[in-house]
Length: 224
Image (cartoon, rainbow, N blue to C red):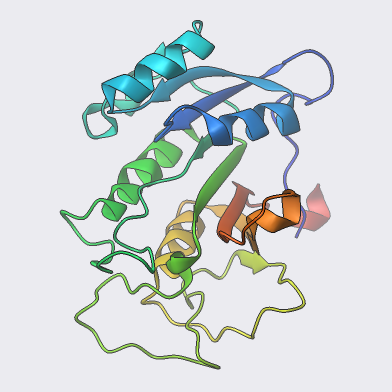
């Protein structure tokens, strides 16, 4: 299934708007701005030093502060919603605490709430490769296939375009990536994801990252 048409054409001068979550200093936003020829309308970052740096680079972007305190019914609509929710609890270098209540990586739920309220034309998500193997509930027994777990049965709308060197991933509903894709599917969105190392864009190390692109599903593609 192909992505739906954006609300406005990305051609021309910055005709699309972006909402940025877990913004940091805006590294992901730079890429999203270039790809969509868009500009950031507002951002959410809890760290005051990072938020200050972000505002200096994008003085026109409205700061929303802590994502857990945002009332999404009062936030301006945007065409593109992007963010890399915290990775500490799913990272292979972390404690693998999962994505349950009280975990930092569990803040994904607030991004999902933003998607539900804003209904953007596009959602861009970035996270660590550990999202593939981290369970949403680490106390449950893990099922693996070819040494790796994979996307969930609930994410029926999700499509993965694998790299040639990636192993086949069986579906299970317990993985971090599965939770994200399942939530997007429940919100009526199709999604495609891929895993890219920094070396693929000129970096001197692998530092693999998952990138997810989601868009509103078309119930009957033959009618569009």
